[in-house]
Length: 266
Ligand SMILES: Nc1ncnc2c1ncn2[C@@H]1O[C@H](COP(=O)(O)OP(=O)(O)OP(=O)(O)O)[C@@H](O)[C@H]1O
Image (cartoon, rainbow, N blue to C red; front, side, top):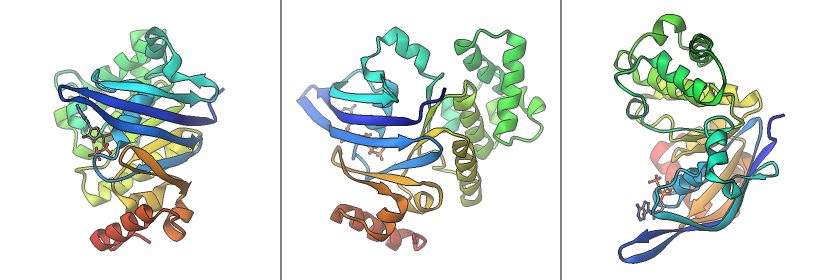
């Protein structure tokens, strides 16, 4: 059965640098529920990426988690031995990074890359994995998926490359997907299509976390919002409450700044 929620609890961590320890996350806690997109917002350096990377346990080695839990229902991902975490990563929890082209291997056909991810976690034949790859491309609405699967990343537009990364994250039917600024660098219509796709996929029961600077996207796509500042969560609320009744002055500041820049935030 799929997990109903992902709960980050008391997550605290620091970077080891040559100048000493730098605190980065302090008692970060929030809950993301299945079937809805939960946004993590906050200015640059607030700790959004380190939180996300810590959930998958793929933060750089200089980053040290001091304490906390990442609970997929009752399973604490931070307490798993690395060997068990390798089985969870990609299969139950996966991540979509911002730069799709950099994340795809330029010299391997797209379908093969998807099939390889599938075979890493499932005991399926190469043929079945290739079939799953075509299905995964079709599921993210890439037209003519069987032909596209044989092509290389440079033959794909930016939007298609991003859809491919989403297909790769979803091919093992994970319960949690973290999307890290998935539409950065794409033009506005493609951004809207990708966010629409993420919304549709999530409605099927996925636990989706969206790291973003774009409060316009949050207003349109997300059900809940976690606001971070200086490595802490300052507010966690429904999107409606965040936009209409922000409790923390910093949230109000972020909204005001975003309205000035975009003119589109409700
Ligand atoms: N390799 C590193 N060594 C030391 N400190 C680091 C390192 N990488 C990141 N940090 C610090 O960790 C803190 C959190 O960074 P993080 O990348 O999580 O922020 P963010 O909210 O995701 O920012 P952005 O929106 O720019 O991606 C920042 O203060 C950053 O300077």
